[in-house]
Length: 238
Image (cartoon, rainbow, N blue to C red; front, side, top):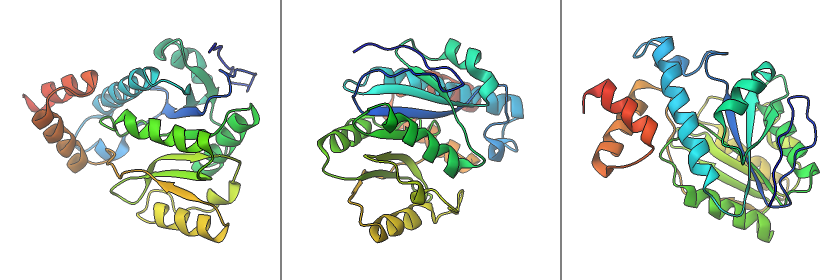
């Protein structure tokens, strides 16, 4: 499987027909990140934490076999910065759209239009997510046993959504950043007659309570995403 990078303008950059997995990424330092953590961390420290999340996610995904890894970044002028962060196996493409729904829909439709046997968008805010869930999602899409793969988060959102074909109605007028995202998505899929495969639930990190949960789970389990683990060790002193 070969790879070459896309441009921010959407130039061709496929890595073969394997299912594409695109990490939704904000370029650290160019836009505010983790704003709900700014009370617990300064904006600068929140950016440093997010950089750890992102680098750990990219590194983990680069080791997953049988997928085409992509980093979908914003803002578009961050192309050079994201290229310097992402492992060489990643293609890169700028996010396009007025809101999250349009950005997700456009991204997935674009990847599917390049011939991938399924396309997924995955967050960069769930650093302990087992890559086995990504492998499962790719296998489901490649086999055609479901039209939609959804990885729900504990707060009602999702950490992953994957499609076999473009489905813009799954993303229009969604109640983003609320506990209703997954239920609404499932109901829309049902109305559209789409077969859904649900992955195991996981948690993402948006609040100080989430961050403390992450720290506790990494401390109990040992190991874990290395940059995030070191950041939390320095933050909490253990």
